[in-house]
Amino acid sequence: MLARVTPSIISGTITAPASKSSMQRACAAALIRSGETIIKNPGVSNDDMAAIDVIQKLGAVVTKLENGDLHIVSGGVNPASNTINCGESGLGIRMFTPIAALSDNPITIMGMGSLTTRPMHFFDEILPQVGVSIASNAGKLPLQIQGPIKPQNITVDGSLSSQFLTGLLMAYGGAGASDCTITVASLKSKPYIDLTLAVMQHFGWNVECINHEQFIFKAPSNALDNSTIKYQVEGDWSGASFLLVAGAIAGGIVVEGLDPFSTQADKAVLQALIDCGCQISIQPNKIEIAPLPLKAFHFNATDCPDLFPPLVALASYCTGKTVIEGVSRLAHKESDRALTLQQEFRKLGVTITLQDDLMIIEGGKGVHGATVHSRHDHRIAMACAVAALKADGVVEIEEADAINKSYPHFFSDLSYLKATVDYK
Image 1 (tube, one colour):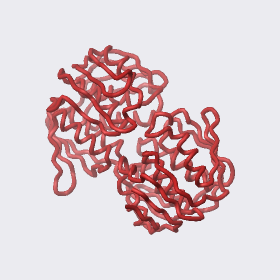
Image 2 (cartoon, one colour):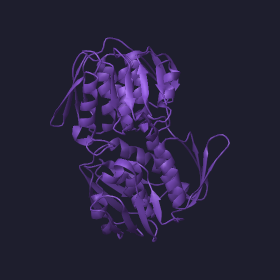
Image 3 (cartoon, one colour):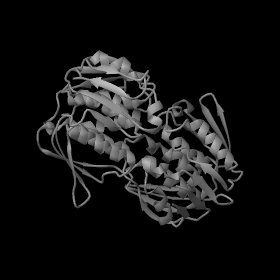
Image 4 (cartoon, one colour):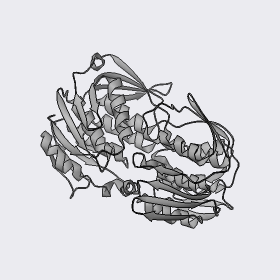
């Protein structure tokens, strides 16, 4: 897909997309419990669809109801296939690998795109410690595993990604772990683990978190019986961050469906928006945002690295040098995002310097029309589109269909907000 974004003034009210972080965790929880689950406001991104396909292959029966809700019936992990494919979802591969190991069936775990090059050596090191045999492709996909997983006290490294820990927490819950502790060193992206624990608690698992260093499994609550559980998927702060930045640059707009008290890590975008000086009103379930003269800001994105792309778009219009910390978290995304942002925004006339763990963006000097490439990275495509809204000419984004991974309605939502966007 080639998308052409013409400089535009946007306005209106839009509802945030469903959170794929919330949706995928809910799918996993619905799979590993016995009973019925109703998921309300289900996501429709490629990652969400991959999660639905995985839980079906691992034994869940999924039906879409007339009102759009998902009805899921499961008796736990009972694989209907000896192969699962997590698409391009980093969370999916890291979460569902330990969950698949709840079964004693041999299972091959596949992925697509950049996922095939991402490091998975964590599983080579940890799964054998909990009774799971594993063979990987030198620490990469495909993975061949055979359980069942046997929960016990273990210590794991949390420095690469919190998603590995999410998978272990879910698998331990599904295995009925009790009086068992997972100890974690150097945990990154702590808010994502808070989201995992919130979903698990909703579904009935009882895990005590001590300083994000120890996770102690207690006896589960009665919610794990065969009753029906209803789960509402939150609005997505990750996807909405692009809308909010668009409002700060070219608004004003109102973004509805966001919980200011969410455990989602990317809620931290609010602090950056406040610090840059835009006009913002934070209310229950909606954010009103509009432009004012924007100034450079300093932001630590170590625990929310997915905010780099929208914040680079924002910083491009902030007078001065914006500094964002946490560059080391960007190497193993859909692209090497630090280099990709530097190279693609250079085409737009924005200078980005990478210095140790810092990204320095020289803003306020104008954004130029140009042709850029998504690098098959959904967040790069969206960042370039948002930056285009106040550029001095049309911005063309090649391979813009990368947005389907997380936010397939992004361009139509921009159009709904009166931006001039052509995409086909």
